[in-house]
Image (cartoon, rainbow, N blue to C red; front, side):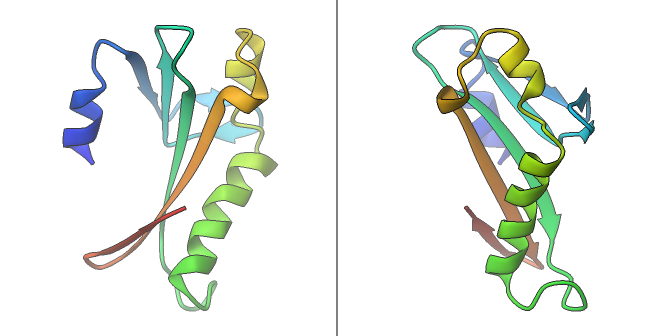
Length: 99
């Protein structure tokens, strides 16, 4: 994950754990160029008592992005909702699922 973020240096402004909407997102990549999309990333650890599958954990991460309105700060800066990518990362030990 860190390697990917390092590759995006110069194209994006990276922030983490900042308030937006009604909560704090994990990672936000704000594009420096208009042709690039913005990216919001939410990380979740699989908890069998809450979700039945890793896929459910990804869906919970994506739902949190929507429910908490994490895109609000980007939209306030004039980035169109369709230009905001939302990614949920689910972890179970060394297994990772991205949706």
